[in-house]
Amino acid sequence: MDKITEKLEIWKDVFIKNIPNIAIAIVVLFIAYFASRGMNSIVNKTIGKKIRQKSVRDLVSRFASALTILLGLYLAMTVLKFDDTLKAIISAAGVSGIVIGLALQGTLSNTISGVVLSFRQNLNIGNWVETNGYSGEVIDINLNYFVIKEADNNMVVIPNKTILESPFKNYSLTKKMRISIECGVEYGADLDKVEALTREVISNNFTQNEANKEVEFFYTEFGDSSINFLCRFWVDSTNAMGKLKAKSLAIIKIKQAFDKENISIPFPMRTLEILPNQQLDIKNIVDKEQS
Image (cartoon, rainbow, N blue to C red):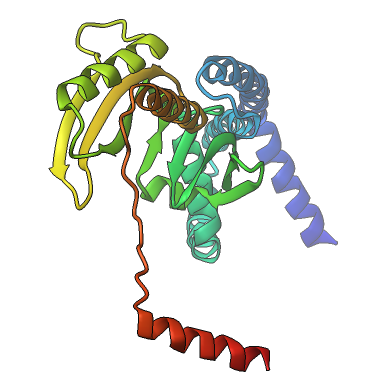
């Protein structure tokens, strides 16, 4: 009992001696707590205009809030002169962090990739993108995965790491898109007339506003049964669906104009020639099959 009483007396003296430090540490912790709440709100409002994903906004704001709390805790422990304890905690946290990082390497990689993707200016929710063999509208950029809705209304879930490490095509970065149509006309056709008619059809159905964005027409090759050409023009579109609709309309209008002017578009044909002696063989085969 004497030893216990002596120990308690020592602790009491130490406590009384460190009352000012304890008071300062408590004040520091209170300040850190309210500062962390303020930091959470400030970060949320600051990045809210750049990041539309709520999960990513919450992650960044909570991370900033946690850093503020840890800073306050560090200052409080420094005031209380718990340097040795602080070093032990930091060492243990470092070892634990390495172990946890190795165990959750894939998950952490996707989470970090999700944060990076959220800050990218060239990739946002609502964009029409093509990546990793899939094409569709970006529905969500979460902490672990990237969601695309394809034209057939199916959802494709892709890990963020895969998106970050792979090239992608974003149809929504520009408001205009160039359409290319390849076709062929018969060798007897008037090539000047074909070109003028094609340009006229495209210009009447698709407005080419800018001087450097006009209808382009090139003959490309002498084919087996046709002279082939390439026609390129611009349309107002930000997704692949608009591109398909414009290309479909252009093909319809070009075919109607060619039919009206009796311009033929050749297509593969196969002619079967049967000699007189072969007719007899075919008749015998038919008779056998019927019998």
